[in-house]
Amino acid sequence: MGILSGMLGKTSVFLIGPMGSGKSAVGRQLARALNLPFHDSDAEVERRTGVDIPFIFEKEGEAGFRQREREAIEALTATPHIVLATGGGAVLLEENRRALRERGCVVYLQTSVTQQAERVRHGRNRPLLSDGDAATRLHDLMQLRAPLYTQIADIVIPTDGRRVPGVAEHVLRELAALSGPR
Image (cartoon, rainbow, N blue to C red; front, side):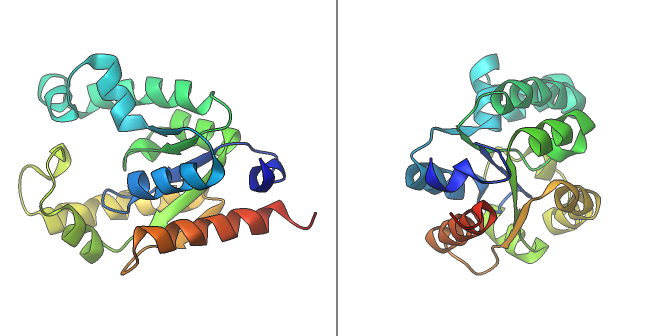
């Protein structure tokens, strides 16, 4: 467990940040480096419901999705020794923020709206970007969510212009620093 054993007394790493910040890709790499299982809250919602997220948004709206996301995050954050990538809006609910903050080391992958727009422009499965101008929508989402990401983050890692391996290595260095001297 090395790095994680002294890390704020927490044994899991939870990645938060906006869509396109690299939470899933960085999370997979971190999980390999830490020899921990990787989980993705969006994938867990899809696994539990048997349908994709755009379908949930279509049938139940954002509120229905957020409730399902809350249940998935509650279960996942209660699982020790994992790396978890959350959805960009997971921080909107106080219950999620509390579970993330109390049960693991929270890493905010900070990304500019410009970088987000570049990274998600070809993506599907982004129901919040399905109507209107994506850049404006990303900006509006960031205005609302950035203070929430910052509020619960133990570590903030800038990702603009960086590749996944470099970001993952930076996270590992910061986790090691939190662990303090041995």
